[in-house]
Length: 249
Ligand code: 5OB
Image (cartoon, rainbow, N blue to C red; front, side, top):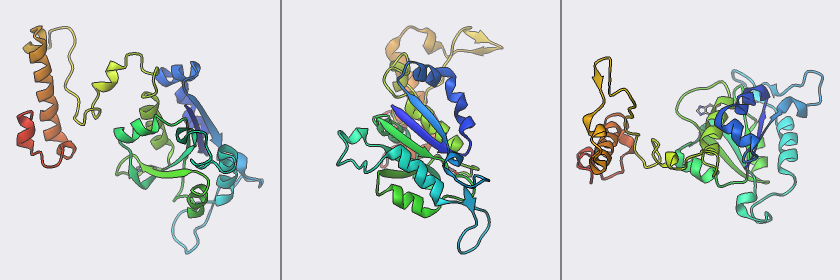
């Protein structure tokens, strides 16, 4: 997979050199390039923002540098119809609190793509025409990572790259560890324990030491349901009441 990020803080993405995704980049499974938006300006101050039309607080990112950056990364017409395969056409993602919410389901979909382009906004936003114009050249999505405020899109993009990158076949060594995560089956994860069996007076639940794999599986599933019901009832399927869930049905 190829990922291009357009940002005024390309150094933010230096941390992708380390850990699991760093390995994936070294092995060629993942190619991430951070592009400095200021490289696409032409004035002495490398200006990327200006005051908003209509007034108001803060600054808005100017369209011209974005237009030049996206021209370079998307090339000419790159719509799904002209691409060799739909999955090869670039998908442009702008992190935005006004976007659709990023989920594990979306991460799985995006992991199928061959080329993602992320555009990190700062200040009060990006001139709307950047989105409108990009949408004439490629598929464009606005994506939020949750209902809270960030100073810019960089941290949101880091979260998305990690969630997507680990789903690329070969990136996570043991693919089984992918299915037992919180959210993969729509429920939160069960609690985990390792040695010693007793620590500071706290014991590991005896069922986990029983060797009874059916009983362990049932206990873990019950724990998943209990946690999900308590902390994230919104994740339970509609029409399935918390009490139904407790019955494991
Ligand atoms: N808040 N998701 C939630 C976001 C966000 C802020 C962003 C981008 C994505 O940029 C300011």
